[in-house]
Image 1 (cartoon, helix red, strand yellow):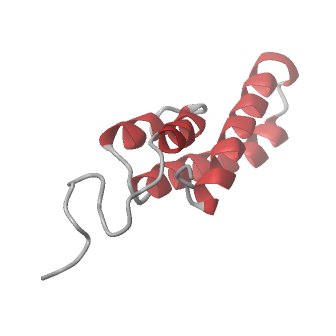
Image 2 (cartoon, rainbow, N blue to C red):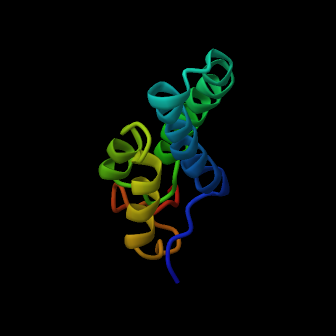
Length: 103
């Protein structure tokens, strides 16, 4: 069973990518200030949500957090990295290799 990234990360990563694409199309072709004013803050919020949720993800490594900080495509790359890591063994923390139990 592959690792399942959190729902918030799975939603915010494509939103970040789509809003960046909309902003770049607007910058290159449309030049609509209203579009930039509406989509810009959505992109900024999605970008921050991707970084924060990737950092809080169970079983993540440093690469996942570093990838999530890449604007636009970083969230999608972090999702792919999490899915490639495979399932998380029960009761372990992949970042430290120690059990999640407190003695």
